[in-house]
Each structure stands twice: as structure tokens, then as C-alpha cells.
Image (cartoon, rainbow, N blue to C red; front, side):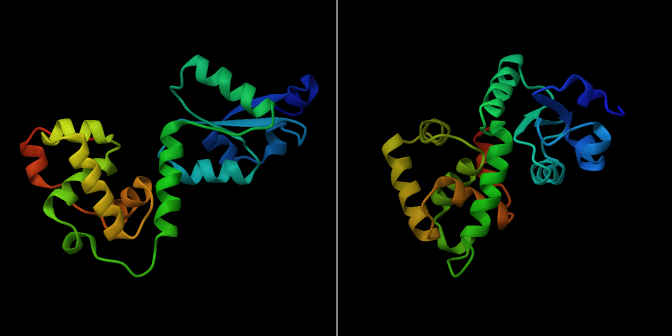
Length: 185
């Protein structure tokens, strides 16, 4: 690469996240004047993405991102913004919510009713109230009530925080959900 990028002076550079994590930007020919978009071959490699963010990358895409998302990401970054794929955003929000809700609170398995545990599991899978209602064979209004009660019991304000608690406590999927044909991720 030796100066290759600096010679053409691009406004933005699309770099593999693992390469950027392992190779100093100077060796890649990336200068401070360039906007960096990292693209991850494996979105679950959170450490690579975090390392890229620490190095100044402001765009994060999966390897299979459609061309329109790539173009939107480049435009966003060139305008000074940050672009992050929906999947990575969800991972980071769950991680952040998990750290912000630490403290005294009920233990999940004993504090929630069986139905609230089912609803929480489906929230953690990313289902909407409408999808949860359909999958459990109940009304949307009933799901809203369950969600309200479980958020209250868990002492959190958002569904993402409840999902993070679910992930933090490593709750096993309820076998009844599988028996009912509830889809899983």
C-alpha cells in the first residue's frame, strides 16, 4: 500500500474491520483527512468493530450489506455522521442497556410470571407486540399489558433493556415456546 491511498487522496475508505483492527492506519495509507468506513466480515466480532471505532471509523457495515446501504453509509459518513448496520446497532444497544440497568432488582426467573417470561423471550428475539400476540395466540393489548408489567418488575424503561437483562441472565428458552412453533433466531 505504501502511500497508495495518500497519492489518490480519497474522501472515504472502505476497510475490512479485521484488517483495520490488526494493521495501523498509517500502514494502510489512511490519513486523518480520510473518513473511514469499516466493514465486518462477521458482525458478531464486536471487538473488531469496537477497535475500528476507537481508531476513528464512523461507518460499520456487514459484508453482505446491499449496495444501497453502502452508498447511504458513505454519504452519511461524508456528511459527518455515523452509520451502523441495524444488527450491530442492536448488539451495542443490548450491551449498553445491560450495563445501565445493573443494580438491585428482581431475579428474572422468580419475579416474572410464566407468560411474562414467554413475552420477554420473544422481545429478546426482536419480535414486535403484534408478532408476539400472533405467536402466543393472544391480543396485542394483552401483550402490551404483559410488556408494561415486566418492564415495571425489571425496573427498566425500554424493551431493549429488558432484552439485555434476558441475555445477561442467560435464560434458557422456554420449551413450551418451541412446542408452540414459536420461531427462534
